[in-house]
Length: 124
Image 1 (cartoon, rainbow, N blue to C red):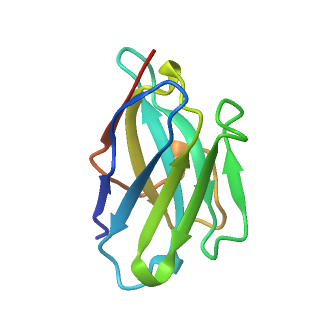
Image 2: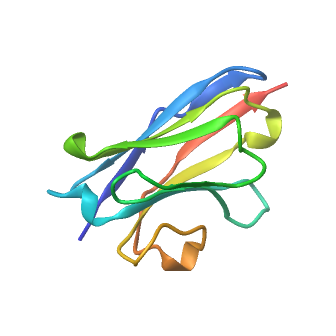
């Protein structure tokens, strides 16, 4: 069983930066591809970014490409999402997820473990 705990969310202004983290309770994080998803009130959960086991491959949603960066530190069993130039439409609960499948993916159904989420609110 993998437990994922997100942190670092908060209230920021448009144009600000924020880094959120996902701490995994595993001995070897490199067994898992990792992803970030988000869900705004009244909307479906959507893919944000994913990173492969060794960090060699990253995927991004078009809406965040060039603004967000996903990274991981397997030694610290932690995954990060650096968010720059935040906009009000980035306001969501952000979820971290772990995937044991063959490759990093944007498909939420492929992820096996999920965190409880951290709220990010961007004011205009």
